[in-house]
Amino acid sequence: MLHNLGKPFPCTSLCSFIMDSVADGIFTVDREWNIIYFSQSAADIVGIASDAAVGRKCWEVFRTQGCSEHCVLKQCITEDRKIVGRIMMVEREDGTQVPVSVSAAPLKDHDGNVIGGVESFRDLSAPVNKRGGGKLPKGFCSRDPNMGEILRILPQVAESEATVLLLGESGTGKEYFARAIHELSPRHKGPFVAVNCGALPENLMESELFGYKAGAFTDARRDKPGRFQLAEGGTILLDEIGDLPPPLQAKILRVLQERVFEPLGGVTGMPADVRIIAATNRDLERMVSEGGFRQDLYFRLNVVRMTLPPLRERRGDIQLLVDASLKRRSLTGGKDIEGLSQEAMRLLMAHPFPGNIRELENILEYACILCPGGLIQVEHLPADVRACEHPGPAPAGTSVPMTMEEIRYRAAVEAVERNGGNRNAACRELGISKDTLRRILNRADDSPLDVSNQAFT
View 1 (cartoon, rainbow, N blue to C red):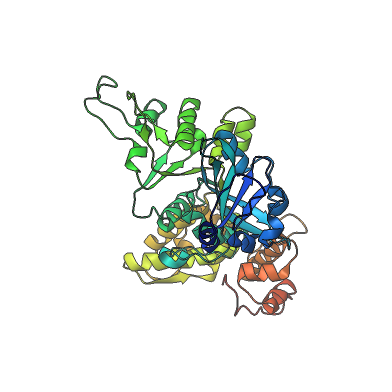
View 2 (view 1 turned 90 degrees about the vertical axis):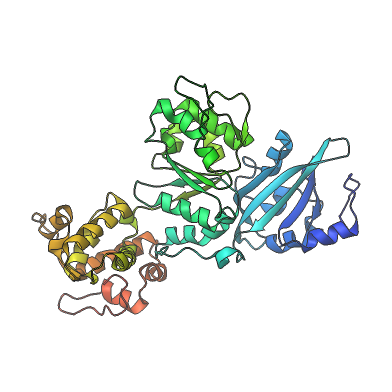
């Protein structure tokens, strides 16, 4: 039965049995944040017995990071509304951090008075049984630990209804990730609508996003749906959301808060059955502190934040991305291109890639146009990439990495540094064995390297 502790939470043993049978964890609290009921699934996820949780304060059981500032139960009780799909980390009794998707609602008596709250949470680290078995779409591959963590939770994040904020430099694949979230979500049969907020003229933004009614202005002869209406039942990507002017920021905030919008010239709100994904290459936190972006909108967008690392910080993935790109092009280009020569790959590994993955794709497209077949050679690469072939003289006491061995050495050293000196983690990132890494780092100038296990040859 539900533990009552003298509180007005009437329930039957059947209700308790049903809630204990649900995979999601469920618990209730009173207005003093005392746990009144704690389901068996909640106990399994948190790692504490139900009887040991009942009667304690909720924060004593969950020890959620930032609990006092971002308490979902407190927000839903205070604002008297439901909250769905917040992603956060909870700490189990053994100290393990577990990512969970949280939903909450106020708990009311028969007279409509709020007497507490009910929260359900789903373990996102558990396997997901859904379309595609929770697997990533084809083309997603990485040995970078930061990217690996994003890919690990991507299917679970997609399954939720949480708003996602994608951060990263231009060309890191933010729209690609947004489309993947849509394809893996329960909304995958609905439309995916991408809007580049930075490309829309400010005087047309509102009508483009929310549409307009006939007569709203001189040339509005009939109703026109906006992007939110076109995305009904699906997902909308608000790319470059940092470029939204303040009036539009307020209107987007209303959509997130109330799930309604008003077309230009309209007098009644329209429901917004759409999942919102926002993306930007700008520093929104800095914009908030400088007054260029609304703080309340930032908090609404920043439910699940994913920061995509630039390509220069994940050079161990260049070979993977090259192989995947050339494989796609071989299916449509009509040329039998086998890969890159060692010297061409050396130049790619040394290139800074200010345009990230998009720039890499453009380089390979250019090379495939010039290459008649076989291996892509240095002369098939764009001029700015070939500029690394003959760099200026090195300062005294330094050497210029002109060999593939030097590129491998630099990649190995950088991987070890990125992983805080952990060589096992560096091996996993680069896809090589510990023996190979040791030989690279301890190489002798007169001894050839064993590169049989190298992922970036």
